[in-house]
Image (tube, rainbow over all chains, first blue to last red):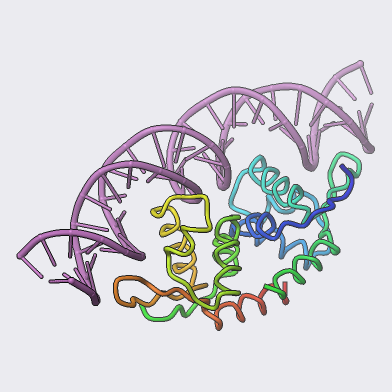
Length: 91
Length: 91
DNA sequence: TTCATTTATCGTATTTTTACGATAAGAGGG
DNA sequence: CCCTCTTATCGTAAAAATACGATAAATGAA
């Protein structure tokens, strides 16, 4: 799968409905992009768990991950965020 | 507790991050108000479960419930929804 | 090639969520 | 008072989420 075709508001809310993931998402929004390790440094949880949270956000379509050398560069999926905002606005 | 003073976006997202609760919320938005029994009629789950979902939405501050005779009348907490929309917009 | 770095995934334990039936509790009609 | 209606809560079972350590896999430097 390349891009998500469906934006499920319930799924997106679920992904953001966890304080750690909200923090990751906000950090990513401010930092524009970052790698997993940076998040591990600022979050009080193990690397494996951070990676797992990133996967949830990615599966919900909210963020993108691009392999870059030994690390993976994550960034906000701006289109998905826009769509999420639109759906919430129409709520 | 009368009204919620804090609006936690993560908590609100969590409450809406369940397909049943999203449906309840949307129904409530369209119907303006309704009692638990109406939701039981349209949802494929037991009355106890519907009541539980309503409690989650209420605890998140998204809806209000007012006891009305033998039943309870639920409605959207418009201020909370507005605040939720604002927070998502600023995401 | 060997080593260090970085991340994803596996296996697993614990906690939370979701669902149900049974039941209690309150309101109101007869 | 007794019965019906409606909802909330209790107890509980099953599923999902959350967390961890260990480890595999990939990259790139030495």
